[in-house]
Image (cartoon, rainbow, N blue to C red):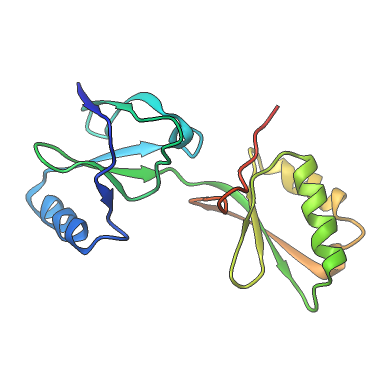
Length: 167
């Protein structure tokens, strides 16, 4: 088992690591460590890569793992890949008042959901099951004519300081 104590960098932010990733892909030495968003919040974790190589993550408290992080680049080239999950995205049909944002934020917050606000103003949050779409349609019944709710399977990353916890 390989014990990892630090993150080497992220392939989406480092050209050097992106080049090493392509080399590892081409020569068959890339190992992918698939983690859920919840697993990525842990400072200590024991997990196997997709090909069965055991990795122990032992980071300082507060270290944040992100999709595309490289946790080993020397003997083993190991990249963290975040597992996709079901996400509801709220898209707005027209003018968005501060009252509407407040209502949506309050309702989502009461369900203890982390959120991500996109550049286009849309709001995304993860769900556990498709049935939650019906729940949020009921919760948003007062404003449903002003929004579209879209369920999709994708990698979800909450905005900084917008992560919530379940009970």
